[in-house]
Image (cartoon, rainbow, N blue to C red; front, side):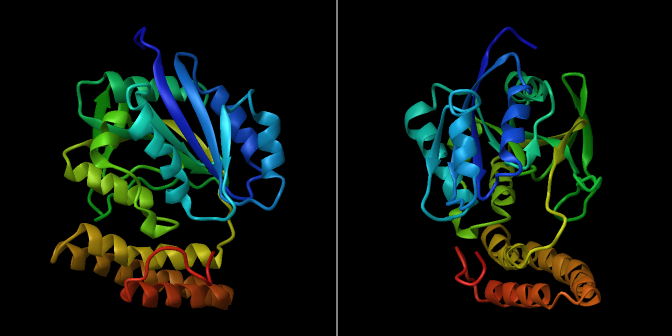
Length: 298
């Protein structure tokens, strides 16, 4: 690690996160020694005790919080702070960390990632750890198109050259943020970070996932209708926006002929008709090019 003190703006978006946010903040405080962190929490209209926990944490773990009256989406909440970084604080910070409240940053990881991201001669836009879910499942590191990912050694550590980062922990350079821009708010939920990563790749940036540093991601193991809806609906907008024929056709064929049938079969086996409905509505609304917040699935 170099002697430079890297300055990082941290953004955590909460929504009814009472069970995880305190641990998230505590783990974050243990993830660095050679960085300066400015931690901001944006709350998307929580109705549980999240705000009380944040109030107790202010001054200890976080600098300030922004409370929204309703859930306007992950991208919108992050963009409130990212706009300030771009318009007022671009010279004050080296990087921005987008961190989910259900993610537990590994001890010392932020020091390592900041050094790889900001002192390497490579043109790196962002870096993520590999994720281990609370169920024990390791989140797969795979290409959007099923291609084999390349392995590289940077700063003496093994990394994967990826075409997307994990939105649960996404450390991006301010230089890349200035050039790539804000998060697309049309998604509302899911695929926003993948969209940003594709835009960064198209500008010639590199994206890295560490093979040596893992992070616990406390995901809810139960499938929820709103998740299924947005995951499938947003596939269409993502494809329309970022790819042209025949790449767009190839991407959708892979998703809808390889992944969708198995997903639907599992919903039928579980007799989760609410998930079947959400999946069907998501595909239909995707074909209709619907974007933003759905009135039915929030």
